[in-house]
Each structure stands twice: as C-alpha cells, then as structure tokens.
Length: 333
Image (cartoon, rainbow, N blue to C red; front, side, top):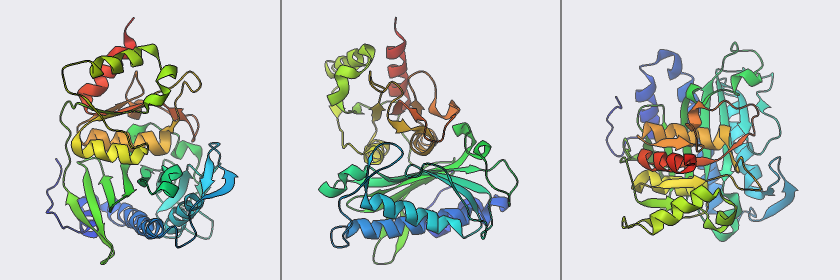
C-alpha cells in the first residue's frame, strides 16, 4: 500500500520516508535519487535560459540513434553522468546519447545501481520552446558491488526495475517518481531550489476517452490500427485527440488527466522508434504503479527481455482498458 504524504512535502523528506523501511536502500537508492534530482535542477536552469546561454541549436553531429544532437542533449547527458559517477551508488549509466554504457571510472566505487536514461527527451522541440524532459529507470545490479558492471546487469526484464521517473521542463519543472508503490509528482520551486510534492499517489481510471498519436504516419500503420482509430473517432464516446509530440509531455498529460499514448511500428520501422530500456520500461513502470498498462501490442512492456541496450519497441501506454482494446484490435483476424 502506498504511503500518504501531504502536499508541500519536500522530495528529500519523501525519499527518506519511502526508503527508511528498506535499510539496504536508505543510504544508496536515496542518494541516487537525490543526485538525479540535482542534475534535473541543473538541466532545468539551463533549459530556462538556453538562448542566453548559447545552448539553442544542433551541434552538427548525430547520435547512435541517427538523430541530430542538440547542444542541450550534450549538456544534459554530461550533467546526469557527472552527478552519478562519484557518489558510490551507481555502477553504470545507459544513455540514449552514448554508443556504449558509461561505466563508473575506476577511481570511484562501482555501486549497487544501474541508471537507464534519456537525458533530454523531445530535444528537437528545444528551439521552438516546447515541453521537453528526462526519463530514467533504475535497476539493482546482479554482479557483485565493487566490480565492473556487465550487460547482465542491465539487459533484463522491466519487472526487475526498482524505481523510475521523469523530469518535465515546461511552464514549471516537475519530477515524477515511483518506487513501485504509487506515483508522486514534485514541482520545483526555483527560488528555494527544492522540489515540493504537488500530486500525491496518482491513479488512473480503468478507461479514458483521449488518445495521443502522430496521425501523420497513419498510412504506414498496421491497417488494423487505422481501423481502430477511425472507429473511436466515429463513435459516440466523445473521444478527444491531444498530441504534443514529446513523449514525456504527452505521457505526463495522460497520467494527470487520463488517456492513451500510441507510438506504433510502421512499414519502415516495424519495431517502432522508442527505446525499450530508457523510455518504454521507465514509463511502463510508472503507469502500472498508477493502475494503468503498457504494451507493445501483444504483451506487457515490462515482460520484454532486451537483447541490446538501444533496442526499440512499439508502445501503447495509458489506461488499462484502452490498452487492452488496442491489443484486441491488433489481434483480429
């Protein structure tokens, strides 16, 4: 059962209260989460003054995903790795921006946890001042602490994840977090420099009538999915379309107000575009903690077993009956 917290509770107190029952986590997972929050504050500050700091625009390079790298991508990636490398609680950072996992340098202790992270989701929206964010998931390593991390520590089922969250940089900066028991959101007060609880124990209804998808790709979808989308638009259920074009922003809206986000595979990319380890897994962990579901169209996202740290997946995520409806639509003969 999730704990009860009053609005205005600091993130630091929340972390202490939720980890004190797990003695092995209080000094390690708690420290890890605080370091993620620290890096989030640094990125938030830089995002808010990106133009003044000369951080707008692309670097002219592409990352391992084949995507153009923005200046803020590099800053965010470095900020999270620097925050996590020296405190002795992390052994590896698996990032969207890096070809290979970042292993904690030998001069620091190789700690207990692996962080899988998309440092700046939606970074193509930076120059137009649209909402962007950070997505992260945390595994407890399998190999002995103090040794070099291996792929067995992070190429695992999403069911092994111990915590996940995201930080959204919009009209305000909000950090959403779950350690498996409820989802809590904390809003940053920039004058104090602290996150305060603003949304407690979020829960999704079984069904909603809002969908988020880029219909510009509809011609390349599975025809069964096109039929489903056209069907709900023609129904009497008063469906609404809400699409921001930034995964973390669309997910955040649907988490607060209800709805389903769809990023299906296409003819050109049947495995979809979103990455399993550091996008789909963390958000699936969160949505299940809020009473929802996440699927690749045939099975729960958290049941998948990655074979590569940049593996991609289709994603259907939101209220559980909506996700089940899509699975049934895709399974029709």
